[in-house]
Structure formats: structure tokens, C-alpha cells
Image 1 (cartoon, rainbow, N blue to C red):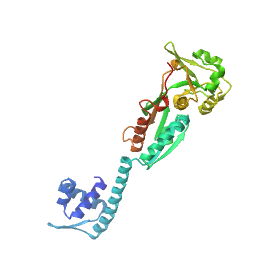
Image 2 (spheres, helix red, strand yellow):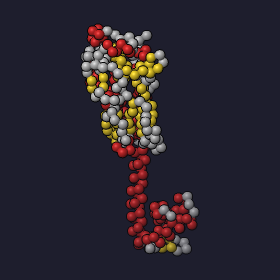
Image 3 (tube, rainbow, N blue to C red):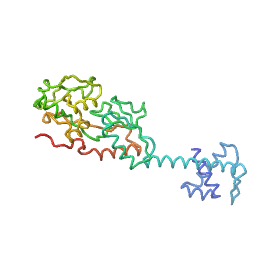
Image 4 (cartoon, rainbow, N blue to C red):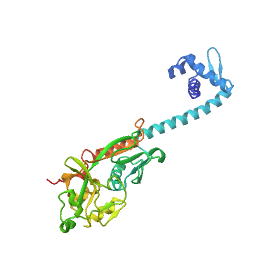
Length: 305
């Protein structure tokens, strides 16, 4: 028998002074209650109760054991209550990994709004372009751009992002407006130095996705400097709309070649387990879905006709 259950039975028998009453309280038979106490006595090699045909009472050893059992069961109840509250009410540390631009542009704002609703949750955000090992690194939640490689993980769609070619009006006034992707060869294109889903420029031409590898006089290993350079009239970029959408809305950048845009880039919240998902993860994912879906605010501009 489970010793912890036997301790619970013993505590009830001691509290009520009756095997029958304790058995009724616990929803077990009187014989089962007696068996639990007998097992405890055998394991301890002591007598816990003095028994007569009409009455039972704790022995001196039984009283001492009862005091300690009450403490143990009380601590256990407190622990179970704390764990239940931790799971039912969002609290504790939520460790999130996200791409730098998405994390800085949008996730940080979402976290600020989420914290107003759930102040007991401590957010730890790690910004990196690399794909994390969630289990090895102790990451609760990762934001992933594009298709997910590891099918063992749980991925929930939270948003989409267009891939937009754009430039500042200053640059377009000097260099002209490209009308087709092929004309990008005549323009200064600001590009990434490393291979990534964003390093090649993609377009849909005659129903097929075509990759271009334009060149220019400014390259960077991250996308943020390219965006800033484009705003300052240095050239053209093709970047996710979550990076440039707000600039387009404010007319700092002008969208180009929209009729050739490739399929939207999926953005997913990724975590390890669906079963017994913690409340802090569930509420945060629900919150960002409500914030970014069905049409993300960064894509809210009028496309060219």
C-alpha cells in the first residue's frame, strides 16, 4: 500500500477516534482503513492505537507520530495548493526566444500589454536568429519564422508577414521605380551577408516562385541596419512587412513590386508539450494570437492597384 495514503488514513482515524467514521469520511471500507493502520504499525514496528471492543485511543508513540504526520500532510497540502495555483493562475518565469527584429518591433510591445493583465509573470526574452533547442536550453516558448523543421514540437500559428520590396522616396526620385523584378539589377539593393530565409529575394512570376540574388554597396549580417539604410535613401530592401510595415504606413518607405510578392511568411509560437500546458504559456500565446490575427497591424496599408 501507498505509505502516504496510509498516513492520511491514520490521521483521520486519530482525528475522529473511529475506524468506521474515518472510513466513511475517506470513502473506503472499515477493513481497508484498519489495513492501512496495521501496515503503518508493521513498518514502524510500534503500536499506534490502544484498542478495546468499544474505543480506540492513541498510544504515547501514536501521539508523537500523529503530530509529525499532521505536519507532513499539512506541508504536502500547501505544496499541492501552491502548484495548483501556479498552474491555474499565470505566474512564474516565462522564457521566450525570438528573432531580434520581431522581438524588438512587436513582441516587446505585446509583452508590455500582457504584463498589465498578468503582472505576476516574469518575462525573460532572448533575441537570436538561431533555432533553439527548447528542452536543452530550458526555453518555454519560441517564435519561429517560416516553416518548422522539427515535427515533434507543437506550433501554433500566430501571424503572417509579407516579403516587401521597398525604398525611400529620396532614392526612387534619383534612381527610378523598378517595374519588374528583373529591373532590380539596375538598382542598389541592400542585402544580408549570411544565408537565411531572407537572404534571397523571392517573387512570383508567371505562377512560379523565382529567386533573385541582387547586389549593392551595403551589406549586413542582420536586417535592421538595412532597413535604416533604406529609410535614409541608400537603396532598396526586401524585408518582412513586420519590419517595414509601420515605415510604409508612415510613408518613410514606399512598397514596390507588390504584384510579384511571394507567399506570406508564417510566424508560429512553438513549444514542447500540448498536454498540461502551463497557464503562463497558454495565456501568452492566446494573447498574441488575439493581437496579431487575423490581419497583423503591420500589414495595414493600401496595396498598389
